[in-house]
Length: 113
Length: 114
Image 1 (cartoon, rainbow over the protein chains, first blue to last red):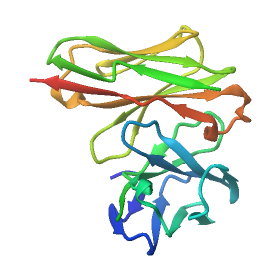
Image 2 (image 1 turned 90 degrees about the horizontal axis):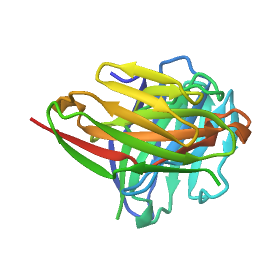
Image 3 (image 1 turned 90 degrees about the vertical axis):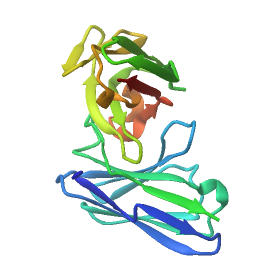
């Protein structure tokens, strides 16, 4: 049982749908992250939250919208996605943002049709 | 721009056949180098952090080493359960200290045949 839990594990959505991915960490960490993992590509950082402060990667399209209501929960709201957004979306947490290793959830496999 | 290159992309070994995975990096001031293991359908699992050249860390059949240009993950007498994708990531010192400075490689897909 991982200390970082993601739901749902699999999601199929059309391009006009709105859905949300959920992440919860039980490790008492202060920082949480969203990563995108596509085939044959390195992990891509999307968003970082640390003590409720959001650090955004400017290259992330606005159809991805993160929300962090508290230090244990992280959401990724999705709307008007494109087929190229199909990927594994991984949530991670760390004790802080200095040298602490990331602890990942098992991801949500997203397919956009 | 920070870069991480892992080789080989894929490696198939017989059980008990020792080998090494390579992670070459270029970074402006290394703050830390991380190794992760990822099984199919799961998220990456943290293995090691190395901070300075000459440092070594071990865990069961795995040993990670670090030089100023590359890191090796040595696998001694591997077993089928060691089959996984191994990821390397570096954190640059200029990033302000945050894990958001991590640059990942594409990984090495390791298969250990019984």
